[in-house]
Image (spheres, rainbow, N blue to C red):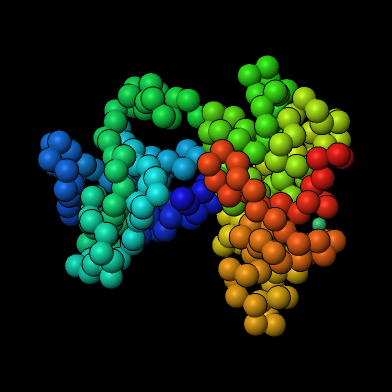
Amino acid sequence: MPEGPEIRRAADSIEAAIRGKEITGVEFTRPHLKQWQHPLTVSKVISVETRGKAMLTRFSNSLNLYTHNQLYGRWYCVDAGKTPDTRRQLRVAIHTHDRSALLYSASEIAVLTESEVGIHPFLSRLGPDVLSGQTTAEILLQQLMDESFRRRQLATLLTNQAFIAGIGNYLRCEILFVCRLHPCMKPIQLAQPQLALLSESLLDVPRQSYKSGGITHHLATAKKMMQHGTTLEDARFWVFRREGKPCYQCGTRIIRTNSGGQSCYLCPQCQSEMR
Ligand SMILES: [Zn+2]
């Protein structure tokens, strides 16, 4: 599933394609949404906000298109009249004179008024957003110390969208490695410097990923590897999907465990439970 940085980059592309432009047509393929085609067509997109892994496309008439891509949803931005080469099913199309934003395969789509945004069951439960400028390390330190989170294992806590919004499986594995923390550890077991490093890394790792096109590994090292022919996929991570390969820090082989129903990758030496 795309995580916060990937959703934000998709939102950037949509803004670049259609924001502020006259809309020439809006299409929904689901019958219950067709009533919104006309009201949205006579307005403009003023911004595309992201809330964790969800997207909120805001229109000038105060309506908001809520979409959550889940596993298969994907946005494409294309020249007017063109369609992308995909076998996915079209769900939403927003057309302007020169560019269109098309959403395929997403199952969670709704048109919301401003007041409905505030009480939306998914949006209203979200914790601080990793990519929001308003989210600070101090706020995340408070979250880690909160009675409802401090006794939970980091492996499941980090992907809990009520704790922090926008982190999925690759980011949790990478953040835990950067902090040298075993996935089974709990905030209550951590010393103050570990908590401080975790609070900062919860922001720094996703933000670097957003800016760099998905690299959570040490940026200069990853770039050097790519200059020498390593693919982005092979250079971008410290531990994620690197099972059996040597840790960049200590040479120990990366292992894969299962946590919260998802594969969790770690270095058993750097992320020892005994620390
Ligand atoms: Zn290691």
